[in-house]
Image 1 (spheres, one colour):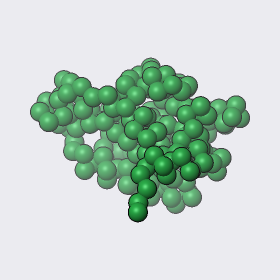
Image 2 (image 1 turned 120 degrees about the vertical axis):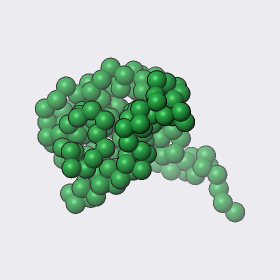
Image 3 (image 1 turned 90 degrees about the horizontal axis):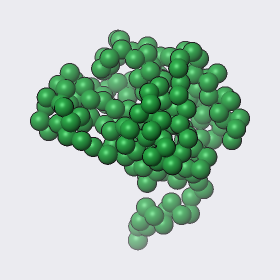
Image 4 (image 1 turned 90 degrees about the vertical axis):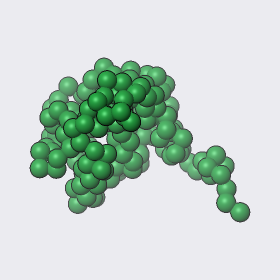
Length: 180
């Protein structure tokens, strides 16, 4: 008889997690990025993810993707890019445990995506959804973002948020991990 998710999570050891914003943290933000040939990793991003993995943390991506609501690209384009990112990371023995995105925006031009959503940062929905799917210890987890909305989402989910202003992402992450 299959067990439900709650009983499974109770029996699992909780692990800390890092919730990364995507554009501006893992990759250079180039406005509505969905094309692989325009993707550029932030310095130290692959190494940061590998460091997180090696430290026993979950690594998650939480990204607003209003370009879908605005008609610039499709959800399939997001999946294609995230699959490519996962392949690039795997080539370095690194991984993202889950990619979450929000395609909605209240001012979107594509009717099915024109709405508010609790998954759109600064709301914490993407984070809380991941907390429900994985055995995460929120008290030892944090968000890394490049905008105030990322930090607001972290706080709304009950965890710290750290504003990444550029530079080498691995160098930014190391002291955060040291705080444990």
